[in-house]
Every structure is written in C-alpha cells, then in structure tokens.
Amino acid sequence: MSGKHSAVIWDFDGTLVDSRQKNLNVTRAIIQEATGKPWRDFDVLRTMANYEASHRRVSNWRVFYAEAFGMTDEDIDRVGCWWSYFQLDNDLVPPAIEGVPSTLEALSHLPHGIVSMNSRLNIGAILGANGLNSHFGSVIGYEEVGLSSQKPDPEGLLKCIEQLTGFEPGVVFFVGDHVTDAVCAVRARKELSARGAEIQLVSIRAAYGPGVFDDWDTPPDHVAQRADQIVQIVQSYTES
Image (cartoon, rainbow, N blue to C red; front, side, top):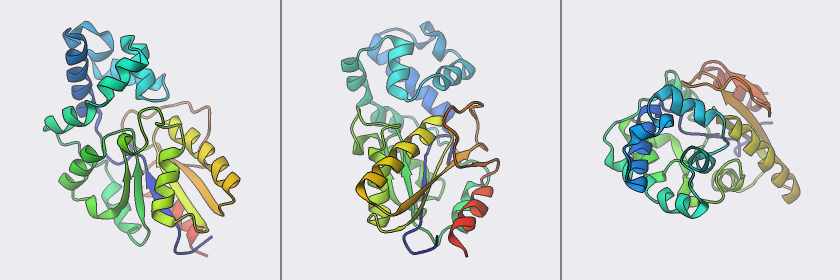
C-alpha cells in the first residue's frame, strides 16, 4: 500500500536512543526526593541489571513505581510530574543507537513521529543534541496523554497517527523495543477499525537496542535485528 499518508512512528527509549543510564540516574534522584531515603536503600536501583530486570516484568513506568517502591496512584501522579524537571536537570546526553540516524535519513521522505512515556521536552533536547530533531513532525510524550493513559493505552499512538496522517488511508509503522509497544499497536488497530479508518498499522520490534526483552506474549508483525532492516520492512509495504 503506497501513498502520501504513510508514516513511521517510533518509541523513544531503547528504540532511538540508549537512555538507560540517564533514566536510572533520574529515577534514583526522584525516589530519593520522594522517600527521603538514599537510592541505595532500594535494591532495584543499585545496578543497571536490577533496574532493567524490574522493567522487564511490568507494562509501564506506573506499574514499576507501584511494584518497586510501593507507591499509591496518588504518589505516582505526584512524582510523575517531576520527571521532566529531573530529566532536564541531568546533563547526561543519551546517544543515538547505532544505525538509527542513517535509517531516519533513508526514510526521510516519510513523516515521522514519536510516542513515548518520556517527557516531550526531554525528548526534544536529546534529539537536538544528536542532530535528529528535524526528522520528527510529531512528538507525543507522557504530558500529551495524561498520566493514566500511558502505553499500552493507544491514546498517544492514535494522536500521533492523526497528527501525521489526518487518519487518511495509508500504512503506518510503529517501532518499539518493549512488548508494551506491540500491545499498544494491537489496541490502536482495533480502535482504528472501529472508527472506520482505512489505515494499516504495522508493528516492528526494535530488537537491535540495548536491554532487549527476550519473550513477547504479543508478537509484532516484524522484527528488526538491526536498525537498517526497518528500511527494507517499510519499503516492502510502500513500494510496488
């Protein structure tokens, strides 16, 4: 299916950039501020391996905060509003994952967007530091959909699709490194169908990034072992 309304939408952390260390640093700072305890008191924050293992077991950051730190929904709403401040206050710049810049350039004829549970301001700052800002016409961070509507809820993905395509017929690709992204795509596909939108939503697993998750209960449509393989996947749908 070809046409001007094709688009590529990306998850951010672990898909476009390796932000693991920055996110761990920020989480440590937030938990210290919220609890008044040193971050070393929490086993999940002592090492990157512990932090990543805990994230593998949950669907999104809200569940992570609830399970790892015993926070209530009210606590999570409160500290969730701190994320952007602490991210911007931390001067570590996550690097783009190998192959991502050239992949974006190869697909620069298509509109691109981002749907993430990170802060929109932080995403913009990191993209700018990596020289990637110009590729993205839509960035949906956690602020754009509210704290209770994070992935796998499809609200952010649907909003990004609307901004990039106006829900006109076409094919949209959603690339992510977590099973939550595949679940989000399934839910968004159902909503698009219910709305009568003639959009083919194709999910791609970014299996090339750091901290890759081994087992996905909800399989994606395609798996990219390298970032540049996304180009061939997109071309297989958009070039006749």
